[in-house]
Length: 196
Ligand SMILES: Cc1cc2nc3c(=O)[nH]c(=O)nc-3n(C[C@H](O)[C@H](O)[C@H](O)COP(=O)(O)O)c2cc1C
Image 1: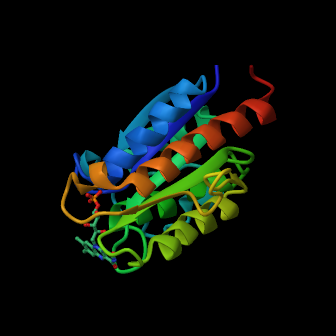
Image 2: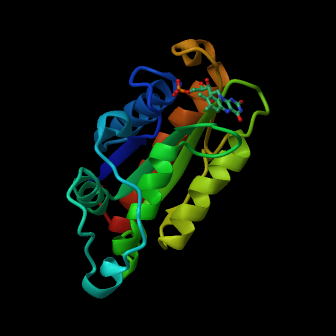
């Protein structure tokens, strides 16, 4: 069975990112995926301190929750990464995960994972696309395959406009693009991995 993981990069457990990532995973499930969400807000994650040990050993010596998250990403066929817009880019929590994923890049363990982004900002044009782009850049550098939300809208992925926690429930466009992303990631992951 195809496996799709959703990463919730917000510190708010029941916030807008969580809501939209869950919508994407619902759609992934309807398309036949086994799904799991990972909420970064309660994980112990120290920033990379550039010791470069991962360049020698392929492993990070830090003993926190990041290695477990990296294992889960490797097991998945599809990866959906969600973040609120913080000053036009991703949260500090998600950036820590990105930097700490460097050991996976040694032999490109995320190669060909089908990946997509969901972002939500309080303003309609508050930086959703620049934040999507930051997530896409991460995926490119990990040699993953990027998709957007596919037809019929086919833009950058899930794009929400919501401020207070829970407001995303009224954001039809954010919900639609997130669901379409979940479907698109699942369908392409099945094709690439030859899974029905
Ligand atoms: C530190 C911080 C920076 C933010 N920067 C932006 C921003 O640049 N553009 C924007 O539209 N919203 C910004 N917001 C608002 C959040 O993106 C918005 O409330 C979002 O819905 C939060 O998602 P969450 O509920 O998943 O945490 C910011 C919020 C915080 C706390």
